[in-house]
Each structure stands twice: as structure tokens, then as C-alpha cells.
Length: 238
Ligand SMILES: C[S@@+](CC[C@H](N)C(=O)[O-])C[C@H]1O[C@@H](n2cnc3c(N)ncnc32)[C@H](O)[C@@H]1O
Image (cartoon, rainbow, N blue to C red):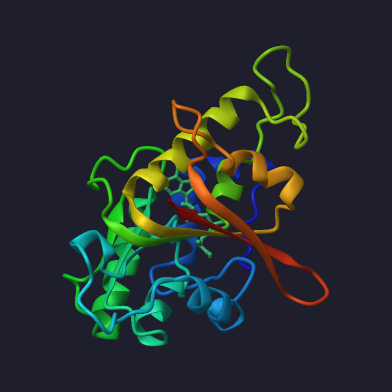
């Protein structure tokens, strides 16, 4: 664990914190939140579309093009390519510092920079991607960073309560989840890996369209880890 823990949990929510953390860690550092790729590989490979479909995909959106949300300097993106064989992986983070470092790392690893890209983007507004661009999207710890509270509820200054997160925070997470849903193709999967238990996290995923139709056809919950469980939410788009 790098020696750059914030003095206040709420700093995890600020771009400034992440920029200065990645500056402190330096361009060659890597750090994986929660679990290593080896630990999560089985759950990813079991739920993501296979890297190379045996028959031609029905439309371009069904190509196994993956999106890594809030990639940080995790080895998750490169492992999707080098270990699991995915050829098209786009990773985003709102820290330009880490995106630049990860681009340099990609070049050193000899990965094709046209198909294996890192882009600066805020996951709450991914206008840079057209609808239905990806077959799979992976979040490891990123919604968790978004969900850290600032100690205020915006309506009376109460302490942050994970049972009842502030409305503004819920709205931001909702914007994010709707963006992920928009950029996924039909049958696409959103995999969210977190320490957050279902009673804290399901509510942020169980959204409906304006017509009241559930956003996700299914939301499966799995766990990884022994003594301490992490939760894996697998949301499949209709
Ligand atoms: C807890 S770290 C997880 C990093 C990586 N996914 C991993 O598994 O190690 C959260 C990451 O999300 C990024 N992040 C937080 N909020 C974001 C936002 N609104 N848009 C894009 N990236 C964000 C941070 O810069 C940081 O790199």
C-alpha cells in the first residue's frame, strides 16, 4: 500500500488527490486496489465475452472491446491483454498524470497503442464514447472512490451515513451508472468489483429507464477472497 493515504476519506473523491498521489508514486509505479489480476481473472473470464469470438459478431458493438473505468496505475488493463488475450482495451481515468504514465507503460510493454488506449475522461460524462461502443466494462474500486462522503448531507450537515448517502452523491453515481449502460452494447456486461456489500451497493445499480424498465436484465452478485470478501456485481444489459 503506497504511503499516500488521504487525511480524510472524502479526498478519494477529488481529482486533485489522485493527481498528487500519482505524481508522488512516480510514472513507473503500479498498484492494484483490493485484488490482483490472478485473483479476479476467473470471475472476469467467466462473465466477459470471450476475447476472440469464433463466429463473426452480429454487429460492431458486439466485438469484445473492453472499457476499464478509473484505471489508475493498476495492472488490470494490461493483464486483460497479456494474460486473457483481449485485443481492444480502452482505459479511462480523470487523472491526466496517471493516463500519461500508463501510456508510457503501454509503449514499454510493446502493446499496440491504437487498440490499447488510455484516455482522460470523467466517468460521469463519457461523451467521448458513442453509445454501444463496448462489450464489457470493468470498475474495480472506482465507484467506491466516487461514493466517499464529505461529511455533509447537503441538507443539514449530518455526518456521512452509508445507509443513506447524500442525494447529490447518489445522483453522481446514478449519472455514472447510466453512462456505463449507454456505452455498453446490447448483452454487454458491467462488472463492478468492490468491498461494498449488496445492501449498500445494489441501490446504485438497480435503476430504471424513464419508462420504468429495469436498466439491467440481471444483476448477479459473486464474491472473491477468503477471509475478507470482495463483491463482484455482474450487470447484464438487455
Ligand atoms: C480506488 S482507485 C482504483 C484504481 C484501479 N481501478 C484499481 O483497481 O487499482 C480509483 C481510481 O478512479 C479514478 N477516478 C475517481 N473518480 C473518477 C471519475 N469521476 N472519473 C474518472 N476516474 C475517476 C481515480 O483517479 C483512481 O485512479
